[in-house]
Amino acid sequence: MADQKIFAGPRIRRIRGAKGLTQTAMAEGLGISPSYLNLIERNQRPLTVQLILKLASVYKVDPHELQGEARGSVAALKEVFTDPLLVGELPGDQELIEFAEAAPNASAAVIKLFRAYREQAERLSDLNELLAREGRATALSGARLPIDEVREIFERRPNHFASLEEEAEAFTSVLDPGDDLFGALKAWLKREYGIVVKVLPVATMPNWRRRYDRHSQRLFLSERLSPFDQLREVAMEACLIRMSVAVAGEIQALRLTTDEARRLARFELGRYAAHALMMPYLPFHAAAVRSRYDIDVLRSRFGVSFEQAANRLTMLQRPVASGVPFFMLEIDNAGNRFRKAGSQGFPQSRFGGGCPKLPVHVAFTQPGQIFVEAVEMPDGAEFLCIARTLEGPQGAFSERPRRTALLLGCDIGFRDEIVYGTVLLGAATGAKMGAGTVAATPVGPACRLCERAGCLARAEPPVTRPLGLDEMVTGLSAFDFQ
Image (cartoon, rainbow, N blue to C red; front, side, top):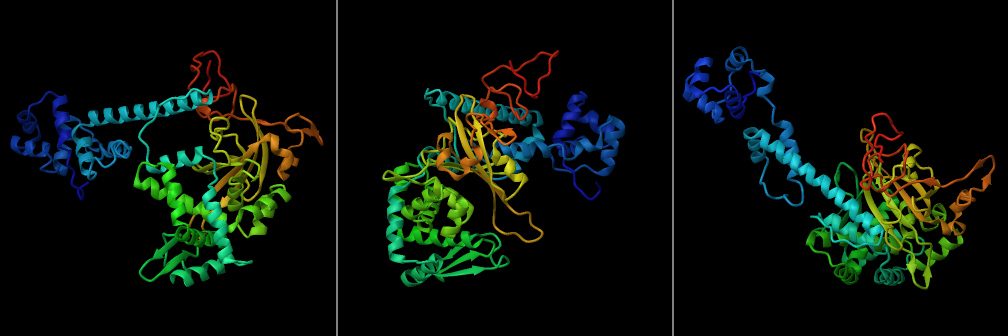
């Protein structure tokens, strides 16, 4: 404590006020002048060790109360000011520190009010979703970050861009890649634009997947990336150069509201175009139908990753050659959702994707294994779900690898067209397979929107039902409701 200056003026002032003392009376008790106490209370003088001991002996003040009191409040206030409505209002943290120090009760009230606002916003969002499922449109909306706007638009629309598919087919004809798309892309970039592709070690490029140096005309890739991801990064760069007009047209059609949102959409469209180039539509569609949508067969045939092949399956919606209408969801082991997409838009209202009983969460228990399961929604709708973990960029020995899980789903009615459907023979009818009976797992859209009683996996109470407050009865869930 002797090595650290402690400025605790507002706290000293509160202690004095709580005891009903004037500055003169408190200064006399501490053996200092009223003017010196005034400087302390205005944070113009720090507390000395002798003065802290005096406060403890004369006024029974706990020394620990005089340091770090506002630290938790400052962290919570930082969270408040990261909200889209308030971000950018403060130039730094000093003002928050001063606010938390000078008015702790007021800062606590602001934090409480913000948390209540956020809770109500989440409830309004849940109710909006619930009403939308019932076919009743609402106008509930809140401040959104650019990434939220982009995700919402991409999730609601079909994951198919006809103009980019056509451009990708024309680009493939120009490249004539044969069995070496990576080499053909590198040669095209060098020939047409003088861009050289180079893979750099982690020590040289520790924080980037891909970086384009305009001055030296070099495209750098991280060695952390798998060969499949390196191919996608080069394909993205080439597609964004060659298809710039088509990409700009699609961005304009999305009617995004900010430049940042348009930049993020450009990245997503570049990713889409790269997949279209790596897995040309007609050959991929034909191979998917012949293999009965076996993702491992498709990834081997086209030299791509499991994630890339699964993602491409959600894009097969060309009118004359459409495939099974898959949708996909990618999460991490903490439940954060990175990507939602679907051939007809992600079925948020019918499927939700927020249930902890979905196989996408089980996939983390056995990395690399494919889980196939039928799930049944509260309204009786059934879906075929395929889940598997995905490995992120390679890390060093001391780094924890990034691992996410992908869920690919479709209506259960398509199970006879899909190789994975053979696992679920009898899922809808309860027919026996061997010694057991295959039945669909009962799930819900999300805990707050699900009214299934007695669910062991329930994490939150439903917003549509009052909580059960019977002290004589305890249900299976921690959130019993009436």
